[in-house]
Image 1: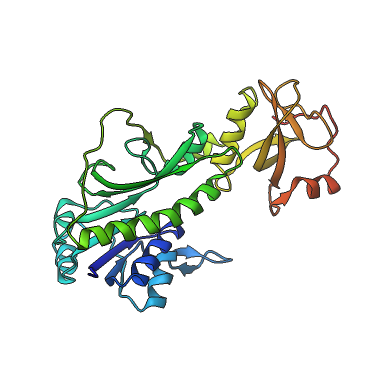
Image 2: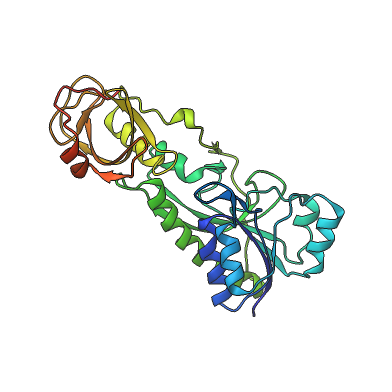
Length: 307
C-alpha cells in the first residue's frame, strides 16, 4: 500500500532515498528543502540543492520556507494531507506542530548507530574517533536532537581506507533501502519502535575548520583516521616548506622518525608512533592529485618536514 509522503532533505546524501521512495510507488506530495544559495564561478548565480534538482526532474512541488514555525507554514504543510513525512539531512528543526501534522508521524534517516553520534557530523566523527562500525537508523522524530524512538537499523564496518566521502556514499545507498523498508512496514501497520538507550550517548558536533590541522605527534592510525574523517571537506592539512597541503587519502606505513618528518621518496611521514604514506593530496590553489603525480613535479627529499 503506497503512502502519501512529504519528503524533507537537502544534500546529495538525501537524493537516493527520495528516488527509492518514488520507485517503490509512494506518492510524494511535496518536497521541502533549503533555499538556493549563491554559487557558480562568480558566486552570483543561485544554486538549487541536490534535492530540489531531483524533485524538479520528478515534477514534484518544491518548497523552501525560511521557517516552519509560523502559522502559515503549518497551514501549508497540513494542506498536503500527508500520511507521513520522511526527513533526510534537511538541515532545519521541525517544531512540534509540524511533527504532529502527518497522520502517521515524521521519520528521520540518521547516519549513525544511535545513541552514538547524535547531531550534525556523525559520518566524520565516527571515522575521526576510530569507530569500528557505523550505520543508518530510521527513527520516529520528536523535538529532541536525534532522540526519537528507533524503528530499523543497518550496520556497516569502517575500514582504515574509508574516507568520509566513501562512508557517506555507502550509507546514503544503505539508508535509502532502509527507509523504503521502513515505509513499507509503516504502510502495513507493522513498524515497531524501540526507545533509544541513554547509555553511550555522544554528540557529533559540526566540523570546525580549526580542527583540520594535522597533529603529527599522534599515533599513525589516529593521524590516518583524522585525515580520512575530514576528506574531502574541509580537508586535513599541514605545511610543507611554508605551503599548505591538504592530505586527502593515506595508508599506514612502516618507519619511524621525528613527527612530520619525510622518511623516503614515497611521501612516508613519521608520526608520534609509526608512519603513514600519503596517497592523494591537494596543494593550495591546485587540483587534487595522486601522490605519485605530485612527486613528478615537486622534489620532496627525506628529512623534509610537514608541520
